[in-house]
Image (cartoon, rainbow, N blue to C red):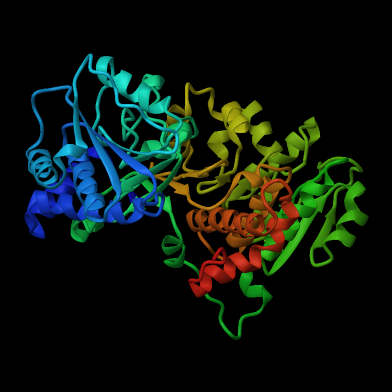
Length: 509
């Protein structure tokens, strides 16, 4: 799914009005009706619903929702925040429509007025400001927002929590942003919803489609995408009946050191579960028995050193290579990694200690094969590309790094972000907090390696790998909860995750 900028959404609204064609007031009715249908899932008729409205079109949506709720006999109050003498035309029309059927339910609040009392059992609908806000909220409206946040009532925001910017938010005044429990974001997710510092304002969010014009959506160019199952289906490779293991590539995984052989086991199992035809895992001598017992399906290449990776190898026989999980940072291992970079021209997957070694030897970056994939967690990325002021800034550094070195950067975390060499970025929709556990990243490395060996290009391997990895984690969490989730559980549920992509059936229902 494309993530449009706020300016592009304005253009899309205008295009829809002109080319559907539809009147602005009727488009607002359609938008609010769809939001209404989602809102009523969160409330019952015993609760009082207090709708806080500003004076623009987001407030117009709130007024339509209020009218629909009144018509369905919900207990509704509307508080209009009169911070100006001006309001939008569509707001005026819907204000009159609501007044005609429920005038006694509307309260106009001006500066210095006493705020209506909010009970903790009430539901608040926040329709003060939409995603077009361009400056921090101050003064009177800031006090209103603080009153809402202090109420302890459940809060549902329309489109975006009032006070938050749609395209970026790190410079906002924190107390002047509504802290929603749920956000019903219209037609597209907003860029600022995807970052951890905004989670306390956004809560759980869902996209509410309102039928904006598909021609514009298809043609508009964006730099951000939300990764969903439909995106995966476009390039998923179905297997031929007469295929054999040679069709699915020979992978080389370079992993493990003394005390860290678990990383090699997890990555190897994940690579094979992701569909690699053959896998050779190169490990130090200390891991020989461990690997042969734990992953009998993998072939094992034994280094001459007992504890670390040191040996030169013939890389020419391998379709794809991943390096890093558990290898440590010994000087001899660093020499090995330099040799790998200089002698393998196809994309390489770099993870964990391989990233840390490169961070200490940044002059090697210019020699990294084009299309290679880096899979850092935030601290590893910081070592590689420098510190950032916030997650928005870090995302910009991530894009710049990917473009500069013509690589893919998979920055792991909630909404794992995949930055591409062309400057675009994909935010994943699968995964959960239970996956913040030892070995989860090693599993992702193995999955991406297995996909590369099957002739998925680097971008496809990143997108499918991240999506499947997260989905397998979601399947595990559904059955076992977050706390007990382990990396091996993700591997064990990869089959169900792949089946859900193939059959287009959610494994979570």
